[in-house]
Length: 270
Image (cartoon, rainbow, N blue to C red; front, side):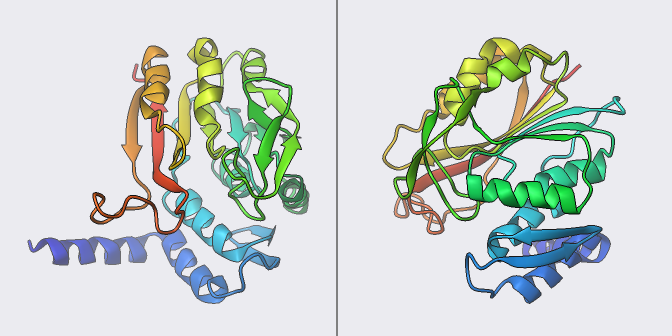
């Protein structure tokens, strides 16, 4: 079969068979052209969300509810989930959608975004979610964080740099017998945090890490992979955004301060 035609057929099949793919299309049509960073109210599935930036939410919905990046297998009726970088709660809503009896620890450092997170949890009656209004880090001494009005707050962002309170993720891992899912979207802090947690990852079953490489910093992907391998994980790596002619185009056109972003799925094989 012609590869182009096959690709078209796969896309059409996905659109016809995946109701959330169609929801993503409708959300894009309705909210995709709204002015950036303008608050809005968006209904999806059984949820009603307040969002600070419609475009960011639309792509969150695509990754989380359409592609289901965070879906995992579990024999537990009450899986324990650490949501590091919970943002406005889209991931929390997904976890409750798929694992209704789960217990979630949701970490979010941006005070403005945390207000949306708390509001969305309350307005949608999402239960058994503990919100920790702190950045996950390798110490509890605080961290300088560049604040963004959507989902891009980062230790590498110089704009709106603010001292934010932090918690040591390792301390929280030590309190749990089993963590079924450790989701980590912490915009550049992932390597230091995982290295600090290296000895406590034995009780974690699944890890999702969004890896960020900033152009003004060493890439250090090998350090992250070393932590996962030494902790006994298998892993799969996906690049969410392609870059044509990478020898010529050395940055991401959507995020020019970065030259590489990866989704890393780490799991244990019995």
